Length: 218
Image (cartoon, rainbow, N blue to C red; front, side, top):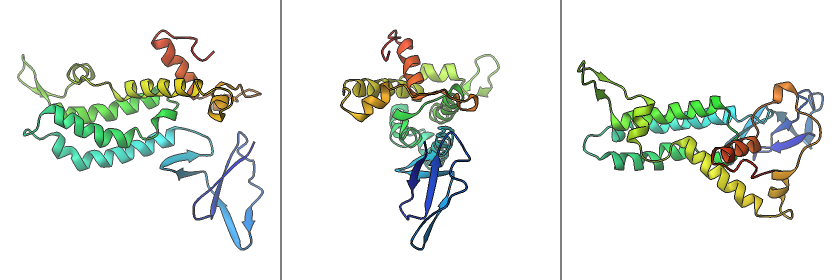
């Protein structure tokens, strides 16, 4: 099935299909306006691709978060402010920018790792280096030390929690709502090998198994 999305300026379109050759031999033209075909575009701040891949969206979120981090990094490392204030600042700036739209993300381990690395860099800026008691040298805090110092849930923990909350909300909607039908429906056919990425429902099942509710969406 071919999906069509159009920019607000009504000059571009994108075909979403398993067959990447679909629509290539056809152009779209209305009156004197030609619609150029693109492979990705932004819709409501989210990057959509013709492959329906989350990777480009994560790259875009991390790039925006990186720009935000450089803007507030001096604030995050200030010795005049408590760590709690700096963490709150991080939560309402860098964290919100990076995690925008996360409820619908379908993350593979690769994307989770990239998000953790991004968050840990900010936390290292907040807590600063630690002096080795034996050698006296200053060194960066490792992930385990950061987890001990940072009492709030990590970005991955927040994503999992909010994603399950949204899944529960949709599950309670009932069959009359489109969101519920899309959640529980089983598409016909099989996914090709190159498209065997992690689905949103797969992530929910993993999250539910993690908290001991392994059959929540069956």
